Length: 396
Image (cartoon, rainbow, N blue to C red; front, side, top):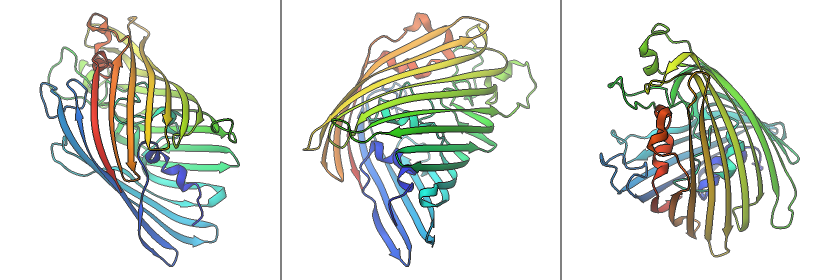
């Protein structure tokens, strides 16, 4: 099958790992590829990756992924495609395989790819350009981890232009980056209870556009933009009660937009990229943030800039600066900031094996005295600590 828009559909995987899928079946126009990875990473204390240690001590975590890509020729102009990918991690209490991607679609070649299932919104195409680290990047991104069920997507490329559109159907408990007051652990009604960024979605939509130039000096330039939003399901526990805070449907809606620009590629030589995104959340009613402040909603803004140099021998040196701001809308005037710098050295020993060392330095993150907006600052909390990781990964 010709290289078509299927490559764009799995671009997120290629950003962070070497794609080396093996074809395990290929006959009469039908093929199955298998791919995956196994890794072990040591995380320092308070890195946010120490789920197995109540004291957040430094420890070693192992994890794996396994995926299959399917394709079957339907006609001269259409190919049936599908993907399923699971993740298994040693910090999973049940040690189960959890699905990352599950979708099926039809690739119409130059007329685009249509798919349905579990995957990210179209806005990921914009912010993924600064996702070049393994452990401590993407702190200022929203939408990068919004991998949801019940999605419909359309992707097309014409010459050097790309267009992507997604629509999310009603689903409970879906990932929404920045929805810190989402589904929470039961228990305390005071203090700094923190949600799991999961809410009940009525519908969600997203579109993104991009243009990539021919090579200029050390590589092509890419310019991308995207926007979208979501409406949440109405809650059923009675409006106005204090329990609303702990309900995963405290939100009314959100809107989102993002921009990015890139120069070069990560294959070899210089790579530069910057992204900006903004997501504005609205509550159904003014909401008590447990800390005693009542607001109508809040806005999260994120700005990331990264630079990388990849040598011909497989060594890549990368760094960046990340700024995230959370500011209340209406009611009390509360605001927090986090500014960090990720640093990363990777050695791709061969196409299947890599080792790396990564760190994150706190540049200017608000400390405890600024945590009036405490309930939405768990994402910036660890940013106050200087942390590191050392890892090895086998990809197949």
